[in-house]
Image (tube, rainbow, N blue to C red; front, side, top):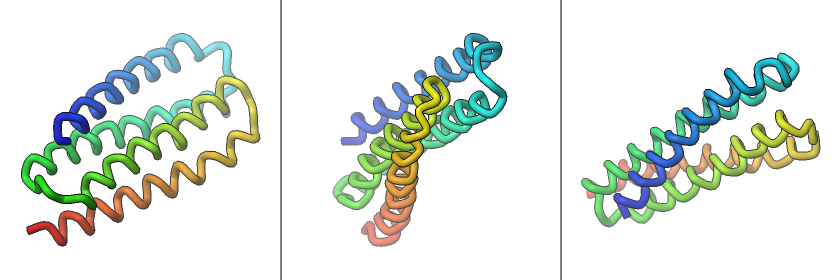
Length: 124
């Protein structure tokens, strides 16, 4: 499982760089300042959590049997998809209804961090 999260983290970090460059160069003149800020927020949270996926992979090398840390990693990935993904789509399409998805992604990210802390605390 560590290799899975290390790979997912690296793939997501790559996507962050690509999306960040796309936002800075490709969208600068086509989005309003507000929507560009929404896109930037998506990239920013995406990058933090891509690094967190890498961290989870490294932690699983040490805490090899931690189910809580493993679940934390999967929740982190779901949070990236729901929270960051909804911000990307919202900024690119203007579909305000997608704003209802972001809180579920945020809840997933909060749950992931809570489980990560609990998993580390309880690990032997």
